[in-house]
Length: 224
Image 1 (cartoon, rainbow, N blue to C red):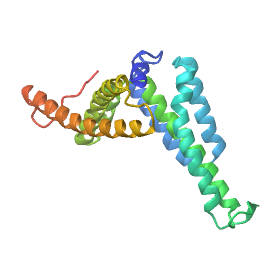
Image 2: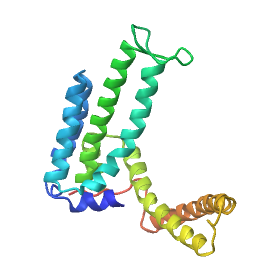
Image 3: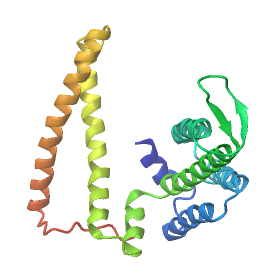
């Protein structure tokens, strides 16, 4: 929900969405073409500067936003460094013959830098462009309509799920549902089960809403 709010209120909001879309795609392609880790790190750094100082994205939010892919990619690349490769050994851990090889370390650093740069480019698009304009640009480059409609429905349903989770969690907390480990697991199970049932109910409501508005198999899209 914070991402959606920032996408509508950032300082780069009024820049043509096609320019931002093309820029993000170009940067991601460029990162894959240039096999130099320092170049990818530079791209990630420049995007961070743009978002923080030009788009005025709050620094605390951006650090939280980037920490999730940073953490996952770091763990993945550490595993790659220790368990991949067949080249020269540059470090021995002394534990179960686990070593770091030169080619594995190079691959891990390159993968980490690419992941960080590509997610930064994707984050630039997500934090400066509302989803409706992103989908409009996907339609311009002839992405199949079924994928655009699925993305739109998923994006809409996410907010419904978040609202339902918040309501049910608050109700459980007021009844001491998370008092102790046993109660917490029980409440979590009930939450997941009820969320599944609520999702089925909401999907039926959504279908009836579409049918009542003349849905003919294709969702109308926002065209700025």
